[in-house]
Length: 356
Ligand code: NAI
Ligand code: MG
Image 1 (tube, rainbow, N blue to C red):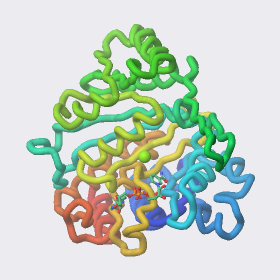
Image 2: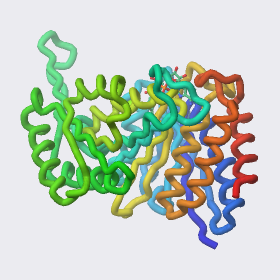
Image 3: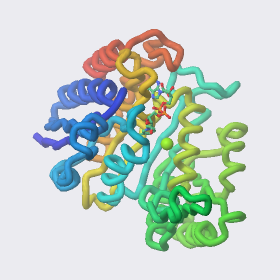
């Protein structure tokens, strides 16, 4: 029997609600499969930990995480702690410290979920956004001078390296190649950003030669937002910088019906470190504690985790159960239903148990 060691970091707001739901479903999937078990360790890191100790996680946090096969992460963010502290104190040190350079964000309209675009339903929108997750605009390179004075300056420098861009392009081309349509759109802004993103475009063209069977095109990021809304069927796999993909994937989540169904995987493709799986959404303190958070994103990212761990059959069974429950109209309020988090979770557990 294979045992996977999973570090669960539910963290803030609705994080514990959706991760708790996800762990129930994962346990059912493992039991149904019979070929593996999950050995889950929960960590109480996050904003409460920060308020108690002055740090989002202990100094040896990353070192402790190295012993795990994967990390299952909720969300960070509290109304009374600045967002740059919560983000840079927990989520980004894990992504960047473990060189999880490929952030993979699948978007589909699940059956039973009414998406906002007229005439666009399940099957019409099936994308995977690949976000560069280690550098670019979120390199943390910059500073402030003359703080508080009228002449204050702040710089926020985007870093693009040949190594960083090449490896994310290779990942995106390979992913596009593995999907039926073999179609990749490279997002850029190389008209206005004429150094980093011109190199981005050049490297895309170089890497494209290694994948002759992948059809690819280039889109400026502003025009891309229009294409996502007006011609969703024309897109399949998408690769973009850290900032651009961050923004585009929130749009993608909304076009698929709700942020509450959008998952993300922070992957170290070389498997030197554990990869991290999380819903895209934040801690949603406007609905925290009410028991109505949509757990579908945390189920979907759990399926991505099983896939990464080498259990594609279990991942497929989990997604089939999620789709069955959505199609049956057992939905939380954000997607037009009246079900609670626990009711959706119970239904998915039931569907997993009954699955072939
Ligand atoms: P958010 O994603 O937490 O919420 C945006 C809207 O979507 C809210 O109205 C919320 O109720 C709704 N929503 C989100 N997830 C949902 C779910 N599972 N079910 C139903 N409705 C859901 O983004 P917001 O409000 O901008 O940020 C709140 C906090 O979360 C901030 O502190 C922010 O910094 C943090 N954040 C953390 C992220 C992370 O940990 N990866 C990502 C995004 C934001
Ligand atoms: Mg975001």
